[in-house]
Image 1 (cartoon, rainbow, N blue to C red):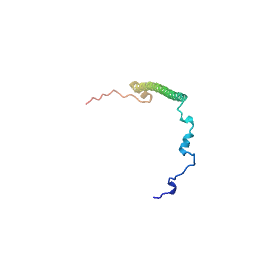
Image 2: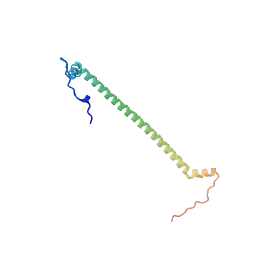
Image 3: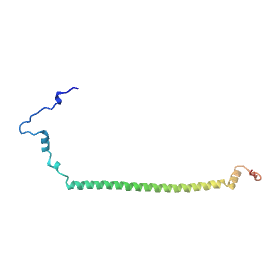
Image 4: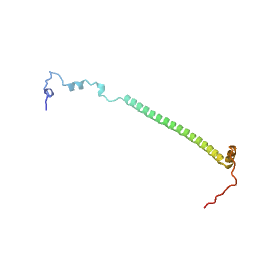
Length: 122
């Protein structure tokens, strides 16, 4: 393994009256950085939290309204489709009746058969 000369700790003597770097940095930290938060900061943070909670509540309320509107429109569409289905079933029943079929056949040049034939069940 290679060892570099530059990686070793060197003993450096400081000039008279000089302080180490860590001590100098601590001395230059502004006094406001060491203080606690002011009450104004807590009030502003509380206002921001309340504002965000209000936005979440508003979003949820609007989403619930949109969902309710969608449900109402789907229920209306279902009712219309049921009415249309009943109407179509009525028309099918009308066209399937014997008098309607006989009339349609006569209009298209067909004639009725003779006597009705009953086939007994075995």
